[in-house]
Length: 418
Ligand code: T4K
Image 1 (cartoon, helix red, strand yellow):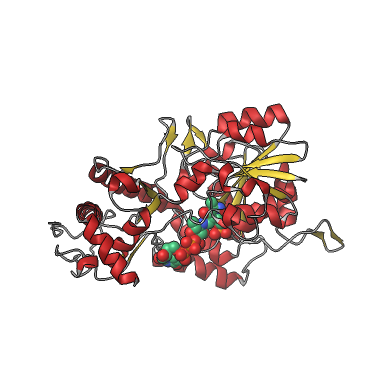
Image 2: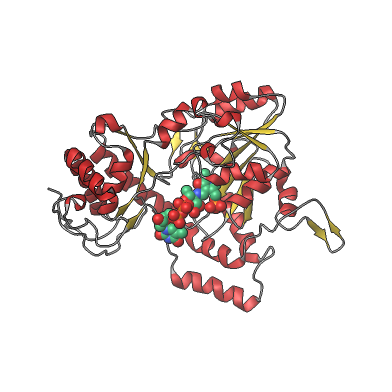
């Protein structure tokens, strides 16, 4: 039996409606665990007085975009918060990544991971470069530098690894490979806001890193992103790229785009930045609860987190071994959905399976065994500061109950699909 919650305050101390008590699993005909959908992410909202005050400043100044004062303030505060040499804010993480690659004047091939959001690979393609897919490590889910070394050719100009779910890549191995073969390194750090590795800010590894400030992210500006780095050599070029290449009233240099962040988005960021520490702590407590509840369950494992990582708890993933758990990842996903627990199968399908990329020799499934294995096994569970500890307990108990009822769940799913 799954216990009903006794306390009704969330991890940030806010009152929440009571979740439903326990009953048969929804997939077996019971009521759903939650009356409303519990999504994988829920954006943090700012203090309305603080946000309203910033909006009033924007309205009074009649200055809405194009390097406004709030944007400059946000960039400087992010630079300090993230411990990087520079921070150039963009309208979203995808455009930030496109501009980062462009600023390095790359050509030919860029080695990347297929186990990522489509934006990573699209940014390579939009730059007229060829993505080369490299398999990932089974435990960390990140690009494996030993395999990347085998993929370097005379046409390779860069590596674009992703710190997937916020866990740092083998940055030391990647640095060594890049130095040996004369390659640039751009990290997709969309998930890694505020992460440290060996005590060093994640944005200080490689030539450049990009962040996403999408609403579903740990820190957000509704839509937004940034390029950060350990040296500001690319700053001028990035500033031009995000503003059409306009140098002044008389000169346009290069093929720029419109990648600017508006003052309204910067206001959102300024309103939320001070809450990030609290959000990370709340998520950390909830993540420990998931881990304590699920780590003994046969067939379930977690992403390996290095001892050197200072985490941000951007995502809570779970790896499902169908044979040992008794149900596949997809079956668990559907059984939880019936409970109004809306998990996500990031990152399925792999980018290498996308119709735009599957013709590439490096996209052949036989070359990407670990990535394919993960794409069939990983589930992202709800994780955000406003989630109640009791809601996490409810989800944990539900997963255990689904496992116990495995054969009945499977046949109920079969019936519902017919
Ligand atoms: N690189 C990597 C590795 C990335 O993961 C991403 C983005 C990027 C680059 C590109 O960065 P951006 O250009 O986006 O800045 C979501 C996000 O839209 C996307 O930013 C993110 N990665 C990706 C992992 O997740 P979807 O298609 O799963 O979003 P969606 O709309 O299904 O939202 C997920 C859940 O969040 C929903 O079930 C409900 C909840 N939600 C969503 C929104 C938008 C809310 O509660 N409120 C909201 O406003 O991509």
